[in-house]
Image (cartoon, rainbow, N blue to C red; front, side):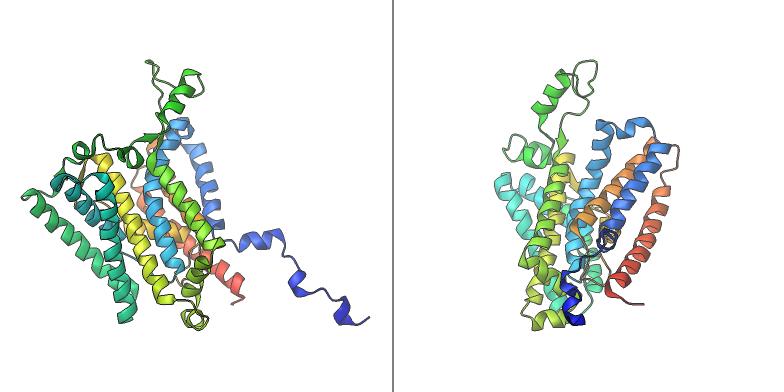
Length: 367
């Protein structure tokens, strides 16, 4: 029998579990969640890991995570969007005007806001594609443009104020409000409280009235994005467009359409965060979403997205955002100065880039 006959077909060989795990982009973020959890188990007040504490840090994590998932998809596609934080303010202004100034019901105001944000996302993408300029430069310009338009628009719509109030009153009683504000599954939590399963106040009211709706949106988007990336041809197009644009085009991938669509999706993620936060706060202002573009990109990088594109994970961004939420809220349960959060951001970004670079070399065989 020849050597060829007895040699195992390379295609039938299975990689060791450790090797497969090392190639997963979300590995670093999962490890980060574990390490941060251990840190706060040691240093934080025990109430951080009660049901109430869990909801406290998952709420900001969810708001950031919605942006991070959009940023991750775009980064996998090989582009950046530094304007998403400003888009939160800009689309929040438009939503507030629709609800307060124009008196539109949510069934019209919400789709109009998504269309509005998506249009500007498409403009961002089209300029990047047509001009050939780096998306970093184009979206950096729109970061300032959207922030400035938000400030000007607020003054025009309010007669000089930089804050538009009255949103809560405008949407009160609308049948869509519970889908974008407040807590879900209230009756379930009240039932659990009556059975003594969860903690209550002396009055018998549960300390956790339900699951904040932004957490549910966060989970839904993470699952949907993961399914699209890993189980559909569109996901393959996204990875191909970010990995090797020329090879993807030669293979029939509509690279330009994919990239513009990703810019639209990222802008719509910003619009969703704007709608949720504006309804919750009952007002909107020009500083809404300030610097969230950087936090979203950092969360995506922590989650395994390469700065060069073509590699990453929506689930990784999911865990990256949870790390942010745990740290920013967790520090309040400790004796540490909360200004350490800024140090954490820079440190996690540097560690994530070094880790992802090492993983990329391992996957591609580079030295």
